[in-house]
Image 1 (cartoon, helix red, strand yellow):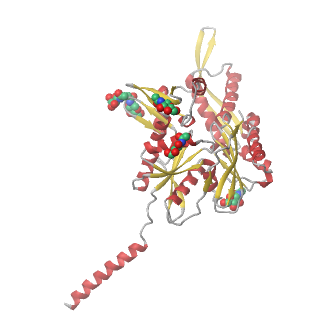
Image 2 (image 1 turned 180 degrees about the vertical axis):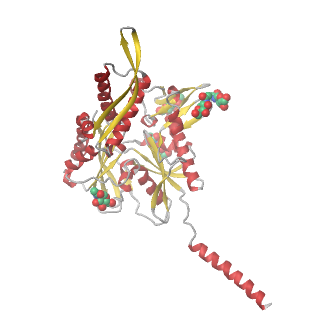
Image 3 (image 1 turned 135 degrees about the horizontal axis):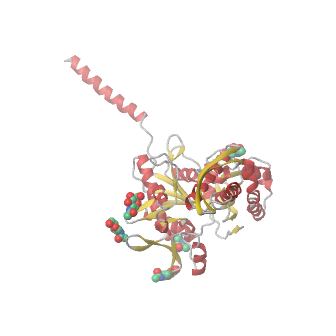
Length: 438
Ligand SMILES: *[C@@H]1O[C@H](CO)[C@@H](O)[C@H](O)[C@H]1NC(C)=O
Ligand SMILES: *[C@@H]1O[C@H](CO)[C@@H](O)[C@H](O)[C@H]1NC(C)=O
Ligand SMILES: *[C@@H]1O[C@H](CO)[C@@H](O)[C@H](O)[C@H]1NC(C)=O
Ligand SMILES: *[C@@H]1O[C@H](CO)[C@@H](O)[C@H](O)[C@H]1NC(C)=O
Ligand SMILES: *[C@@H]1O[C@H](CO)[C@@H](O)[C@H](O)[C@H]1NC(C)=O
């Protein structure tokens, strides 16, 4: 009997101990607020991990940490991200990208026609705002915020799947130049995706936060964001724990696509020199463009690469037109890539000089330089910037993920995650205008 009692006693003690230890080793609470970067060409989602104090950028089921900002419609459904991108070749009229360039903006017919001429899809004017015309098994229009909502919904699902909890709250970033209406429509996009937006923060502020600059003693931060198609330069001034955008400038026609285009032109000329004909077949041009894009990326880490592209050239001989199968092979150096783009690379300095003038600062008064956007991986671009300032820029965070990292930090702060961090509050600057070079 006594033995039984003590056996029961030890069971109770064991249960008690297990409960106690369990509490000690209980996994930290799951993040409930996510950070969203709804970019012009790519989007990402991140979560602040309570406990470790680290941000995790969430990958999809194939390990990809950003999704293309593309939404495609067909008779079966609506496809966002990589699935949308995959449909762009066969369904270009109903595959919408760059929707962020239209969100929350008012247009007149002439401006809208000019803006939309370069797209394979139709953009229509509806009471001063842009709408995309979609024709699948029926015809309808989709607003830019609806396109945004499909991308955000995809990111929300990625986060829910990864974290294993439903997510209803988020912090989202927007370009510093976005006005109140553009911010409101971005919030509406999130609402359509079932997300409540706790705060909207500027992309450059988010990038500065990714480097922890909200926690250290810096006063003037210059953020250079060079993406696929645009350059944005922002001068931030920290006052106490708050960031104020002092000046903005940019070039909305300068980015990675332009650098690729120069390399593509050069490569086409080399084909012409070697074989007497330029590549004209659609598949050849497509293959050459892909090879050039891959070469550009590799040249950021390697001094030279070899391009090898099979082509079906259209030769006009004595017996009429003929197809000639060749394998075009060409060695390319980083130096060549830099020479081809030398004038474009130099254009980066104009908006930098402008923000310094407008912010009334000398270049040696800049405490930190933060680089954002994939094109800032190009060594020559980093060199131009560091030579201009006589100091090294901050580059330790992946330039494609710096914004989402900062937004997720802010989301962690809003969610009251532990360890608690200093919040970076932004001072809105309504009167600021962005200078554009292009
Ligand atoms: C729409 O695209 C999806 C995904 O690629 C495909 O499975 C489906 O068959 C397509 N539907 C139509 C009507 O083309
Ligand atoms: C198009 O067809 C699909 C499947 O047949 C249907 O589910 C969808 O609702 C249709 N869409 C429109 C716009 O008619
Ligand atoms: C058109 O837009 C204006 C404000 O921009 C609004 O007052 C009006 O109700 C809109 N009209 C329609 C038909 O949506
Ligand atoms: C933006 O939304 C806020 C809050 O809903 C509203 O007060 C404000 O008038 C809106 N501004 C614009 C320009 O739409
Ligand atoms: C980058 O930022 C950190 C602040 O987090 C700073 O300590 C560091 O010196 C900066 N500069 C470089 C070149 O990394």
